[in-house]
Length: 126
Figure 1 (spheres, rainbow, N blue to C red):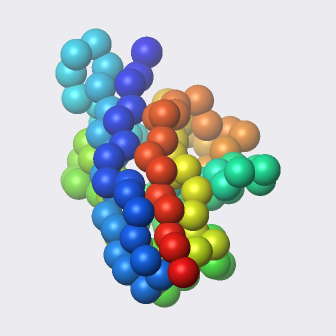
Figure 2: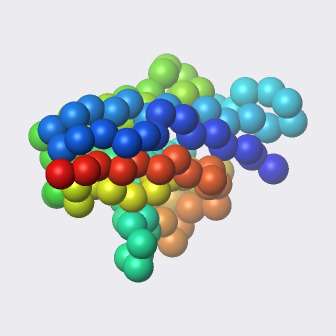
């Protein structure tokens, strides 16, 4: 059982910034994300979507809607994951989840992940 903890959510006005952090633990020890790991979000009534992620091969994917505004980063090795969110918009309002796989996956998409945190809420007001 891998326990994931996300922090950093909150309420900001449009144009503001937030930084999310994610760490994980397994058997009371820190966990290293060795494969796919990223940030995903789900707004009320919508499907969970990928925001930014490291693929299993280390390449990075961003949703078109956040390119140029959000930046994903991680410690090396990947024991912590971050998401710097700038120029926030009301449409970025959602619950943000840190998700990962414990195995090599060709796709770093929600339906392929087996490790999830409980999420942190981000609310952007206009």
